[in-house]
Amino acid sequence: MKNILGLLLFFNSFISFSQDSVWYGRSKGPIPFLEYGIGDDRLGGAKMGYIDSNILFKIVDSFKTDYKVQLSKYHTAYIAKESILLIGKKTADRPIPHNAHLSSSIKVYGDANFDYVAIHLDEHLPYRSYQLIEPSRIAVDIFGVTSNTNWITQLKTAKEIKNTWYEQVEDDVLRVFIELKHPQHWGYNMAYDTIGNKLIVCVKRQPTVLDIRKLKIAIDAGHGGDNIGASGITSNVLEKNYTLMIAKQLQTVLKKAGVKQIFMTRLKDTSLTMPERIAMLKNYNPDFLVSIHLNSASSDTVQGTSTYYRYIGFRPLSVAILNRMLSLGLKEYGNVGNFNFALSGPTEYPNALVEVAFLSNLKDEKKIVNPKFQKAVADKIYLGIMDWLKQTKR
Image (cartoon, rainbow, N blue to C red; front, side, top):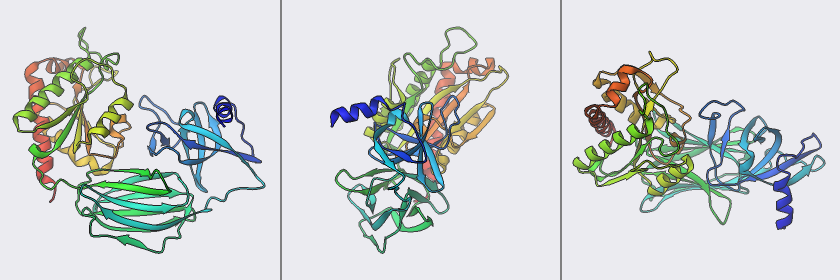
């Protein structure tokens, strides 16, 4: 068996596709993800979302380092070849219909810490999720599934989930809606259980008391070590050094405010990959994350401050911080959504990335290297967090 798997991996980049046969594979690795298409930029292609390992995929084409996979009749996606373990091919005389798989019961319940939605399926099938607001909901699309769900059991042990229902939006796409009690999204994760085919959505509850002193806060100082980030106009002004200075200032401000649980992704000039940072943060499970960066542009006239988010349910934190940052006299560069940055990708906790100012602009650079300005930035981020907590409805 090991020899067969080894051969499949060896020929991973050489398999051929035709109308007579298709290949199948399963996702593997710590953080596999799907992309919408073959587009690319410095942050990578637009991500459909992170997925679990051991998910079954029908592979229909190959493009450079990616496989094109058929999710359902009308939906395709791309996944890195290194994230797929080939398991063989199926011939056209015995095709698998897109809607051959069925859902069964759905159960909503809670334990001492989280709420859960368990969706019973007959295979580990691909999915995507997204956040909706007003009212706040999580929507989960499961591909290749036709409903055979005739009951949804909802227990009172669920504290944050208000309601759960589904729609068969296409013949082979099942959409499950999870409505939340609070307007603010506090995060969730999705994975299949280890002994069956249940897709489990784990939903974080809003903290009982929105007191910053009782919250777990994560701070990420961008770049570090071999990854220097942007360079300033002045020699020896490196982004990695000044993001760490500002992050430490924010840590100090939070400690003075009485926050006891603060996680720093780095406290010195060390190299950390994005997967390593994501793993650290998921293990810590913060109530929210603030990531500190410094911007750069090809034109030295571009300047200003900006904040970034990926998911609409996490936007309020980034807006609140930007509003406070603008009181420093910086120009507005904007609040940017759908940001395809690695640390903006996890759905487990609200997160905001702050691009303090532009190192490529002389006026902004002079502010960045000033210790008083660094302290002022930390103060404004703290005040933005406080504004966000105050406006979050109980």
